[in-house]
Image (cartoon, rainbow, N blue to C red; front, side, top):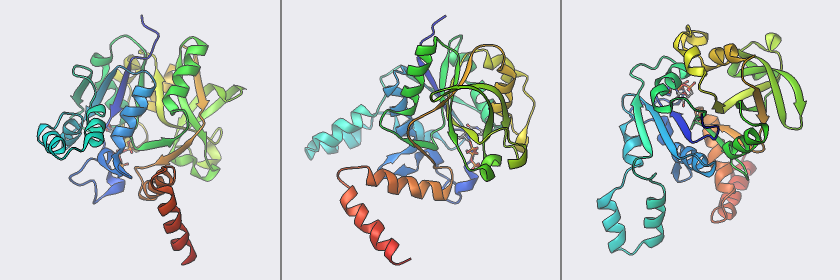
Length: 293
Ligand code: UTP
C-alpha cells in the first residue's frame, strides 16, 4: 500500500448559498481572487505538495470548472497571433497533464462527507488529500506541502490543518479536543462539529485541508446525517480516532474563508498586497479608503 500522498480530492459540489446571487449560475470555486479562480489556487497548492492525480467531485452547473482545466485552442491561437507569449505559457501551465484529472458527480449535495465518499473508487486503497478551494491560504510554504512533509516525518497517518479561532466562533467549525502538543503538531483526542462556545473542547478549528487514510471511506458509507442534516466529514473522522495516528498541524500562514463575502473581499486585498506588481497601487487604495472611514 503506498504511503506517499499522490491523489487529491477537490469537493466542489456545494451550492454556495452564502455567496448568492454570485453563485446562482457560477460555481463559487470559480470566483477569482485578484485574477485567478479559487479552484486554480487549490490545484496549484496540490501540485506544489507533489500531488499527481486530481479528482473533482462536482455537481450540476459546475462544468465550467472542467473547461477551465482544459486547453482552449481558439484563445491560444489568438494569443499566439498577438505574441502574448508569457500569458500563453501561463495558460498552458495551469492545465494538468492529460490523464491526471478526473471528475465525478455528487448528484445531490448531501454534505462534505458524502462528497468525499463519492471519490472512493477513484482514490482506491491509498492515503489522499482533500482540499476545499474556498479555504484559501496565503503562506510562504503552501499549507498542503507543510502537511505532507510533517506526515512523512511521522511515517503516515491522518492529518488535519488546524488554526486557532476566537472562542465565540467555534460554532462555525469542526473543533478538536487536543492531546499532546509538540511544537505545531497536536495529537487529536476528539472532534466535534460546530459546538457552541460553552461546549467546545478548545478553540482549535479544522480548516479545509485534510490528509486521510482510506479507512475513512468505510465509515462514510454508514455515516448518518449530522449538523445541518448533512453527512459530515467531521463525524466520520471522529469514528476514525483510536485507529491510525491522527494529528492536527497548526500550519504557518493565513486562511481566508472565501465561501463568505467578507472573507473573500479580505482575501482579494491580502493577495493583491502580496504581489509585487500590485502592492504599491493597492496599498494606496487601502489607505485612501481607510482615511474616509
Ligand atoms: P460549504 O460548507 O462551504 O457549503 O462546503 P456550500 O454548499 O459550498 O456553501 P454554503 O454554505 O451554502 O454557502 C464546504 C466545501 O464542501 C463542498 C463545497 O463545494 C465546499 O468546497 N461540498 C459541500 C460538496 O462538495 N458537497 C456538498 O454536498 C457540500
